[in-house]
Image (cartoon, rainbow, N blue to C red; front, side, top):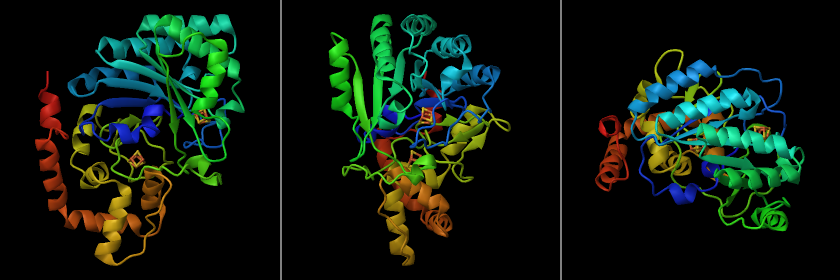
Length: 353
Ligand code: SF4
Ligand code: SF4
């Protein structure tokens, strides 16, 4: 499931301070859709899921990390959990003072009365935001009517709505297309935020030939270290993650440690700091310059560049060699960012009350 904040507005949140501020649960990779661009290869055969009790324990522990303001429930398709369990998790996060968000394809919203009831239950449980993914890929499975229902009833129930649409040069659905559909059915859509997102060629999307739009973002990663994510197998990722499994793209595992400890330890990683301060493309360029290598630095997105670092022969090893022999570069950048209030470490976010 893609989320407008996760992949589209990277340019706009680069200016935010580096500290953990969103905790996301990939509740399951099970999904009734099989979008061609799905970065996690989701389908109905993926049965692993995070148990509700684990979610609740994590939500208690995460209150120690005061900088975390958002909790996001995504997947896969979080609505496959059932409305009541989902509402309880939302309610628990809300009770901890977090802004709550669910990211969905809206496959469940075809029947008007049902869609209205579902959104009513979630709104009463404390759901602040719903992020709907809608584009050419999702529209093969989800009719426009579902989109209309979600918009209409979210507005009615006071849930802030975001629509994320993956656009490429080949796709028909884009922001304007969605606005036109909504304007025909809904009187006032001014409260809705619609964001176009780029395509990362990871997971199932690695087979897609679509040309990406030209204004690709290749700077510092706005998500790594800010957006820890728990997967159905209880691995903890350093970012919202658009990558298939890579053993190095992990900051810990809930089977072995608590989420607050894992997040704290992640701030010891020079590599992840480098991704946050300069981004994967710049890091590849630095390695090429230092070691006279010819690793590709032309990637369609920063996540594609990360995928390349982990999968292409020799790149990750050379990057580790470079990063560990240049710790002073990261230390200086960290000090500068900290002095500008653009970075805060564990002592600050554990202490902030
Ligand atoms: S709805 Fe989201 S999670 Fe499901 S297949 Fe499509 S992109 Fe993947
Ligand atoms: S995959 Fe890499 S570039 Fe993409 S969000 Fe994660 S850390 Fe950032």
